[in-house]
Amino acid sequence: MKLSVGYITAPTKAEAKQIVETLLAEGLIACATILPDAESYFVWKKELIKKKEAAIVIKTRTKNEEKIIQVVREIHSYECPCVVFWSLDYGNSDFLKWVDKNS
Image (tube, rainbow, N blue to C red; front, side):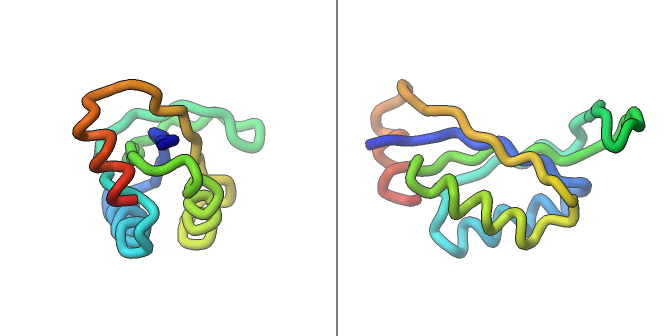
């Protein structure tokens, strides 16, 4: 079983919820956590941006990563949304089996 943890940002909690609900409905993730008041700092088009965003942490099968990126790009309001993944190599084996079964 190859699993991943993903990280996505959204401009609002409402958009984050829409993203999560879409990914769950399509069976692409097992679960997600929305952290609604993340402080983000970045440079976009040569301008320093400081803003509140919602951060989303997802757990999924590695094979779903490309489809998740595609779905998020289709429904996200940002021109270039953050969607990144890390390999999930170790953890509670019961939880990891649940992620594998549900994504």
